Image (tube, rainbow, N blue to C red; front, side, top):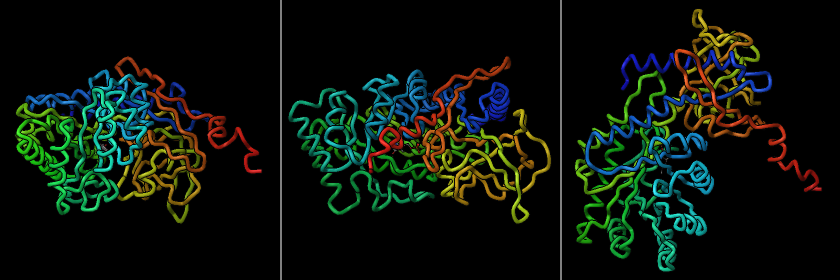
Length: 445
Ligand SMILES: *Cc1c(COP(=O)(O)O)cnc(C)c1O
């Protein structure tokens, strides 16, 4: 998976795409920041995920992409063509999955705050729903009683309370996490078993222990807790009431190099070792990976508008900042990004490394993609590429300073050249004004 050959291919493809993007005019005065998605890379990751779980056992598996990682309809459509479904957590994400044509039987709704209307719609569509808490179960009870459940597979999310990973804000299995039923609280386990025995239609268990910053061993520990609970419930029910276990996503991405560690295959093998019963065919599985499927395949390109210096530190002022790399700017310790330097023609920049800051366009001093980063000295007109940004970066635009949501271009590269296809147009000024109350300037007079 992470062989030198495939790594070279990845970075060769990327360099070729950057050169072609500059040559074909995707970076302009009007659009000084843009984003690329590697179509073949996404397909390869989807195929690797599918193969990884096939290799370790007989369980039927639905891989549902966590839409929040890259909420773009053509991306969902591309993944659908590889047999990957959608995990949605809001009415907006469900609308995207539907617009992409993801079928209901490959769509899973999770969210801690589903309204009654959302639940009703989900059941009417026949998509799977994982309830978060006892009050949500009561709402579903009422819908089931009213005959509204249709073909939906219904489950309950539990929090194994196994602790936090390296990033607190993204750790969902802590003692006091807001997600799911906290399984180790006093009496909780008994109440969960009871909840299943009282509801013969409740057939799934769901867990997701967090995102990034979690060791695979830790994630597997959370899956084991849920597997053991499923066994306990099925024993109490004297039948295979729970037929499917949703193990969530969260596989971390190595943001420090092109090497893919861990791979989906590593994680699937680890799971088979740690929780063998999961793969003997008695349970169906659902996975919900987001970052590990898409991160590698996205690149932000931005022009260096000015090169200056302050206090002896060279600073490249670029058009990529907090609007496309929000987490990196606000929490650079947790979310460092790799940056490649290219010249004005999009050719990899040569030259000795110089310690410099790479800044964004927003009006606050913390808007830096990298501080004190050794790179070939960036000059006015150069291009930077922000790597591994296919998940949770440009796809999750942040509207600070009314900065334009950049265009996204898919690309396919071959020895003969690079072909781009537009995934999303850049936001227009008219759209920015309209979304900011521009159609009712007098509303407050
Ligand atoms: C965010 C999320 C995921 C995806 O996490 P990744 O780290 O992107 O794989 C999956 N399931 C749930 C419930 C989530 O909230």
